Length: 181
Image (cartoon, rainbow, N blue to C red):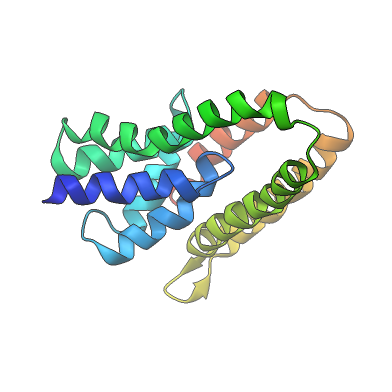
């Protein structure tokens, strides 16, 4: 029964999480609250490990949840359940997009999807930030300071077109130095 539930939940997540790996995080937070598959604290660790691994973030997180839920067989079950809606959608869209490329309704749908993706990502990041900068309902000054530094660095780096590897390396160094807070 848990296998069918896993298929259902990740198929549903794949259908409604437009915007990539970060967009599935609100769905994972909901799963953490509804099932005992993993806790929200474990989800923060899942996200950290998935970010560090090569490959799509959403697939990495889904594979981890599938593994922790029903073992090794859960990995392909969860991943296939997550990506199947996208495969279906891309197949249908690619067949019809050239035909309806100039259609106003099609353009409006894509215009609607962009801010929806931003909203899903913002909804996912907010609990993670709150979890990172608070400890037992009090503010972790070191974590809050690192967050502020990161925000400034992103804006400065964007202005000067800094390579993303600089941010990854800096994040790794700061993670090692301040990992225990």
